[in-house]
Amino acid sequence: MALSVPRGKKVRPTSARIREALFSIIGDRVMDAGVLDLFAGSGILGIEAVSRGASSATFVDSAPAAAGNVRLNIKKADMEDNCRVMTMDFRKALRVMKKQKNTFDLVFLDPPYAKRVIEEAVRCLVDFELLRKGAMLIAEYSISSGPQFPEQLHLLSNRRYGSTGIDVYDINGGDGEEE
Image 1 (cartoon, one colour):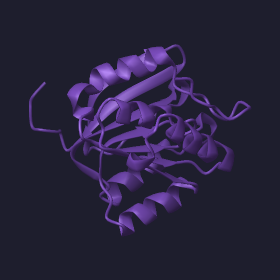
Image 2 (cartoon, rainbow, N blue to C red; image 1 turned 90 degrees about the vertical axis):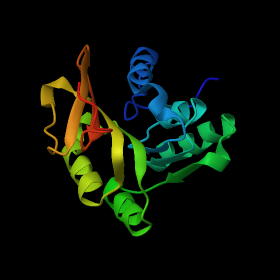
Image 3 (cartoon, rainbow, N blue to C red; image 1 turned 135 degrees about the horizontal axis):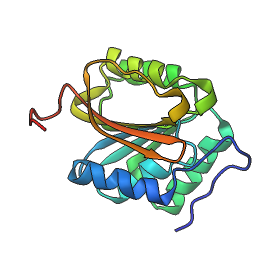
Image 4 (cartoon, rainbow, N blue to C red; image 1 turned 180 degrees about the vertical axis):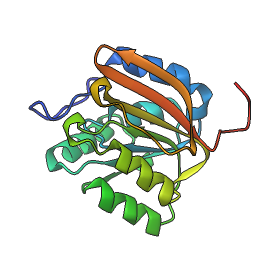
């Protein structure tokens, strides 16, 4: 199924190669997971997570065109019952989720590289207690501005694809297994 992407350069869907690598790292932890696709863009990561067995996905994007495309893609994938889209700034969305006591097992972060908000988003996720114990956080960023994350996050994997960095973390060391 081909997903829709808003026109212009503001949305950069994660390539098939990177998605395959990510879901290989995530493995079975996607099963029955509650997913947050923050800075959703086309929604491709959250939609793929649901297609691989996640129980639900929440998509956040402040751009109405991107959020509209996410809704369209969710409909194309026949996933309306498992997904919700929030068209608002990530800060406001995370505050709303905190009030609603939402928590997540799997979080995708792929903000616009130029805005340099990835560290703030992670800080909010941790401070608002939106990550379940053992949750995985996947951060995509420009390697020219690699982020620094709170020590509660345990680095599982660090990959480079051209000028893109992908880090996979778990919260509080995950299930306690040693590497």
